[in-house]
Amino acid sequence: MTTHIYSGPLSMFGAKVEIAAREKGIAFDLVMVPFTKDDAYDPKHPEVLRVNAVKQQVPVLVDDAVALFDSTQIFEYLEDRYPPPTSLALWPEGIAERARARQLEQKSDEVFFPNVIKLFGLQNAMQSAPAVAACAACARFYEEIDGLLATRDYLAGPYSFADIAFYMAHVFADRKGAGMTDATPRLVAWRDRVRDRPAVHAVVDPMMKFLASEGRGVPAFLQR
Ligand SMILES: N[C@@H](CCC(=O)N[C@@H](CS)C(=O)NCC(=O)O)C(=O)O
Image (cartoon, rainbow, N blue to C red; front, top):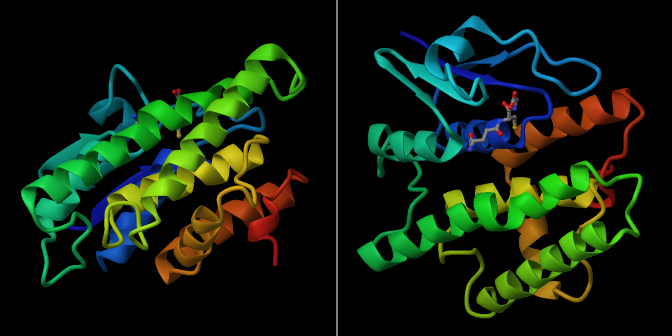
């Protein structure tokens, strides 16, 4: 039976899952759920309602008898279901290393990204105190990650789910006015390394095309 991933054209959490599936070489059908001009996921896709009845959010993954929501939960399933060496390892080896990688993945979604969500609602008030505070919190997070990159090429050592999560979160931060700057040069080099992965291009390029087709801004580092 075919694996299905339900996502949306501007779903940063859906993009995480799609990139991971592509990195692992998994064959899947991508279903783009209805998405309106005002960025609402409406009407909800029946599979999203079935699998994620309360939250009604994408991404959703349906793989035979397994039906899951939440990008981080789906990451765990993908690594178990498609383990190395047949598929690319996306958690590092070693209990401590894996724990650190999982923590970074979670921090990206739940410490960094909430600042970006605040900025979504403040695009017409970017000089307001909450917007300035959200941008400053993003900048502090960039500095923290830049520090980690002093001793490694990727967030948790080898390329991992943590890089996928933070790359996507930061693409949306950049779109909303909190992109990284020359103040974090190691992070800028990391961003370009991740951007240049074929799986990342395959997912992010159509997303940027979608934005451009609607006359919306595309981050400078993704313009070609
Ligand atoms: N923690 C969830 C967050 C999922 C999420 O926020 N999905 C958004 C799209 S990126 C969504 O479906 N929003 C529509 C809604 O909340 O109605 C995950 O990691 O998958």
